[in-house]
Image (cartoon, rainbow, N blue to C red; front, top):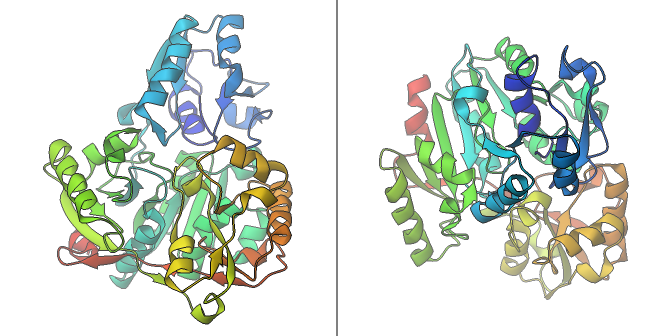
Amino acid sequence: MGAAGRDFHVFNTYFRDNDSYEIVAFTANQIPNIEGRKYPPSLAGRLYPKGIPIYPETELENLIRENNVKQVIFAYSDISHEDVMHRASIVLSAGADFRLMGPKNTWIKSSKPVVSVCAVRTGVGKSQTTRKVCRILKDMGKKVVAIRHPMPYGDLEKQVCQRFASYEDLDFHKCTIEEREEYEPHIDNGIIVYAGVDYEKILREAEKEADVIVWDGGNNDFPFYVSDLHIVLVDPHRPGHELKYHPGEMNLRMADIVIINKIDTANIDDINILRENIEKVNTRATVIEAASPIFVSEPEKIRGKRTLVIEDGPTLTHGGMTFGAGYMAAKKFGAREIIEAKPYAVGSIKDTYKKYTHLSTILPAMGYGEKQMQELEETINRIDCEVVVSGTPIDLTRVIKPNKPIVRVKYNLQEIGNPTLTDVLKKFE
C-alpha cells in the first residue's frame, strides 16, 4: 500500500529478487492518477518479467480475497495513527497480515556523510530548513548534493534516476508543480538535486559528486538512508500532531535535532505543548527554536486588493492545513478581501475540494500532471480578484498562464537564540 514513494523503495530494497515472496500488486492513495500504471519489468527485477500492476487503494479488500494475499505492507506517510489502524482492520478482516517495515530492512548506507531533514507533518518547513542546511555546508567548503524524497508521477522507466541542476532539466523531465516546488529553490541556490525511483542507484550517482548528502524528506516520512544527523521539524500550529501521525512520531523519537518552527506566528501555549511532548519521547534530542518570516517584494500590490491566495498543495491536502504563508502574507500586507476559491474550481481541482472538505477559501496549487495544471490555470482565471498571492516556492507563471498578476511570498528559516544549525553542523567541517 503506497503513494508512489516509500512503497517502491520498500519493494526495491527488500522484495525485489526475494524468492520468499510473490508480490501481487501495489495499491495507490493520496496522489491523483498514479494507479492504473505498472511497476515496469526493468525496475521489478527477474521475478516479475511482466511488471507489477498498480491499483487504487479502494480495491484493496478485493485484491486480498481474489489473490489469496497473505500479507499487506503499509508504506506511505502523513496519515493519522487512527487511520493507519482503520486500514489495518480492513486488511485483517479480509484475512491477511498487516505489516509496517522499519529502517533496518529498508535503509541504505552511504559512503558519504548524510544529513536528513524530516518532519512530523507535511508543511512544517522542511524545504526552507533543507535549503539552510545546504547553504551552511556549502559555506564550509563542502560539495553538497540534495536527494529528494520520491515524486515519480510520470513514466517510471524514465524516472529511475533523475539529476536536476538547471531549469532546463526540469523541463526535460516534464516536472509537475509538486516536483518544481522542491527542486527549483535548490537549483536557485546552486545545489544539485537527485530524485527518482531506485534510491540505491540514485545514492551511488550522487556520491560521485558530493562530500555530504542532504536527504530532503517528503511528507512526514522517515529517511531512506542511514543518517549521521537526523533533523526533524515540529509545528506549533498543529500541537499534538507530533504524537498522532505516522510516521511522524517515529521521526520525532529518532531525531538528533528537533526544530520547533514558526514560533513567530504561534501561540505560546501551543509551543509549550510541543516542548512537553518532545521531552516525553526524546530526551536526548537538541531542541532549536526557529521562525519562518515571510517576505514580499511588492506588498503595495496586495494592499486594499481583492485577493486570491494559493498555497502549496500537499500542505493543504494530506497535510491538513487550512492556510499557509500566502494567507499570512495577504493578511499582513492588507488585502481588502480574500476570495473563496472553491466555487470557481473545475475538474480535478473541484474533486480536491470534495475530498478535502476542510478546504474552501484557499486554492491548493495542485499540478500532478499537464491536465491538472490546465485545470488550475482555468480555476484561477475564473476567479474575480485583482491579485493572486502565491505561497508556493516556485514561479507558477513558468508552468501556467494566469490572467491576473501574481505576488510571490518567500520565507526562510531563522533560528532564535542558541544553538543554531551552524552549531550542530560543525561536526561535518
